[in-house]
Length: 326
Image 1: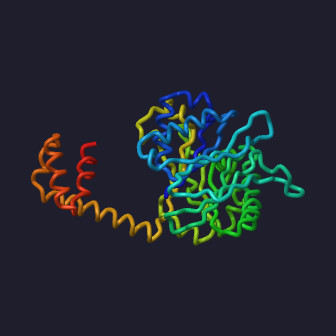
Image 2: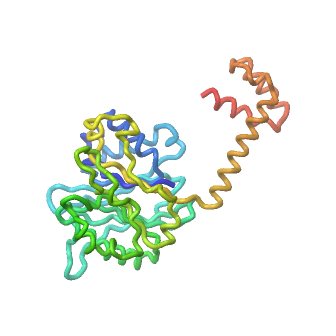
Image 3: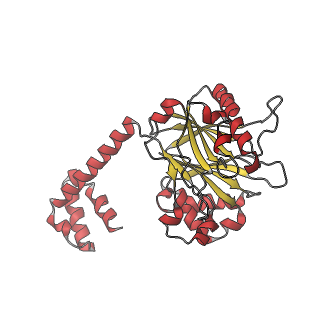
């Protein structure tokens, strides 16, 4: 199960009207089981609804569709943005959401964009209960907002009675915004129970003139860390993967998604192995019929169908033959 956070750089009607960009976004999104988006600026919601329809009508997504949930529009000024989460229904069930109220006595309005917190039940992973806390800090307030996440974490931990928490998003935790010295004043950084999965030397930005590590993934406690596939936390460099110019990549976003994989449960592994074994056995059975090695003309298909029907043990091979033609 692969989870990602993506500062998508003002995802709204203008960006989503560009077919080329939409095609690349569909490729990127299709890599994931859950992807949390930052900087969604679609006021009416119509553009992103249309994008969801396009996403779910493409390739394997037809059989494994995404659902979508979003926060309210957030921000202190006229400029507002949303957190939006896409998740595959066959892998994750949305159990609850919570918009952090940011009204802690004596420290009200600590966040420019209050975290929109999601709780999932994961169907095929070792970790069944998962809480995501998406983050998009205001650059000049990054240190304060990151430190305040400790209070958000404590609140959610108490509210939902779980330790299975992942904090992810655009921390703006590098460069001029947060120095190494300032990092030492951030509680989720200094508390040894929090594990930062994206290293400080990892470039998460598209622009070649800097190598800032703005985007991060942080998990709480060792049980959560053990549920993570080792070394799976990293940025996805879509510019390199899709051989794009810097100019084209920047039209998609100025950030790379950051991603991490969770380990499969024993039951999911067993199911996967059984399916693979059945597929291999099916291929072996096809080889028993030399006729099926012919080019797949209408005549050869009819012959294969005849042999399959004659011996019920080989009925599955008709589907296998058809799949190989597609």
